[in-house]
Length: 416
Image 1 (spheres, rainbow, N blue to C red):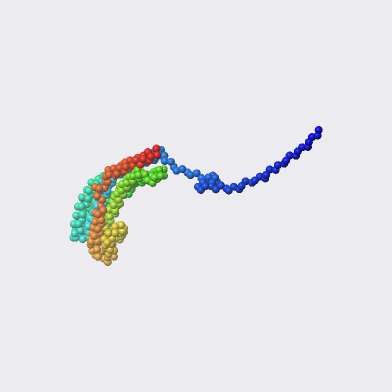
Image 2 (cartoon, rainbow, N blue to C red; image 1 turned 60 degrees about the vertical axis):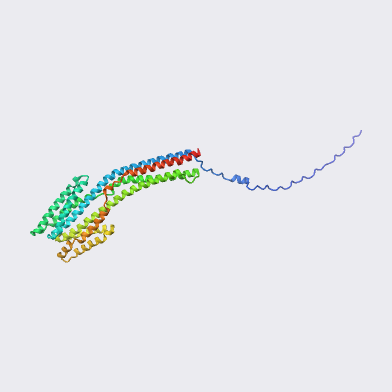
C-alpha cells in the first residue's frame, strides 16, 4: 500500500509588535521634594534641650560666688574701719602740728620785725603768738601717739625763744647790734626741722586697706557680670528673653557694688582733702617765712643775698600753691609785688620800710587761713561707721540668693 503524501501545514504569521504609547514624565506634586533634593538636604540641628541638672549647677555656682564675694566685702569694710580709727588720730595730730608750724613762722616774722623796730608793736604781737604756741604745743603732744616725740621740738622752741629774748634786749639797749643770725639759725635748725618731720597722712600710709577695699569692689563688679552671663545662658536654654529672679539678683549685687563704691570714694576723698589742707598750711607758713627772709636781709645785711634767695625760692612754692587754689592768686600777687619792691629798693631805709609793712603778708596769710578753715577735716566724722555698709552688703547678698533660688527653681520645675 502506498502512503499518502503528507499534507502541508499552514503557516501562521504573528502580527508585528505594537510599540507602547509614549508616556509623560511624572510631574511631582507641589510641595513634594524630588528624590535628589531629599538626598542633598542637610538635617536641622535640634535646639538645646533645657536640662534641670544644668540649671542646678548654675544655681549652685551663683549662690556660692555671691556668698564668697559678700564675705570678702564685709571683711574688707570691717578691716578698713579699724584702720580708719588709727587714721583719724594721725590726721588730728598732723593738723595740730601744721597749726604749730604756722604759728612759729608768724612769731619768727614778728620777732625779726621787733629787732628792726624795737619801739613798734611787733614785740607785742610776738608775745601774743608765743603764748598761742604754748597751747598748740600741748595740743599737738596730746594728739600724738607718743607724746615724747615732741620733746625735741619743745626743746628747740625753748632755745629759739631764748635767742629771740637775747636779741631783743640787744636791740632795745642799743649797746650792740641784735644777733638776728643766731635767731634765724635756731629757727631753721631746731624748730622748722623738728616740725617738718611730721608730714601728715600720705597715700602710702593708706595703701594697704585701700587696696583690699578696691579688690573687693572688683569682685563685686565681677559678680554682676557672672549674673548677667547666667541670665544669657538661661535665656538660650529656655527660649525666654529674661529670667525675673536672676534679673533681681543681678540688680541686688549691683546695688551692693554701688554701696562699696561709695565707701571707697568717701575714704579716698578724705585723703585728697587732707593733702589739700597740708598744702595750704605749708603755703601759710611760707608766707610768714618770706617776710622773715626780707627782714633778715635788712637786720643782718651780711646775709642779704642768701636771705633774698631763700625768699625767692619760697615765693616759687607759694606761686605753685596759688595755681592749685585760684582764689589765692590776688593775695599771692601782692606778696610777689612786695618781694620785687624789696629786692629793687634803692637803700636800706627804703628796704626796711617795705619789709616792716606787713599788709601783704597778713592779707595772704588770712586768705590761706580762710581756705584752711573751709577744708579742715572734722576728725569726729573721719571714722565712717562700717555697720551701715555691712548691713547693705549682707542685704544685697540675701536678696540675690533668694531671687536666684526662686528664678532658677521655677525653670527646674518647668522642665523636670
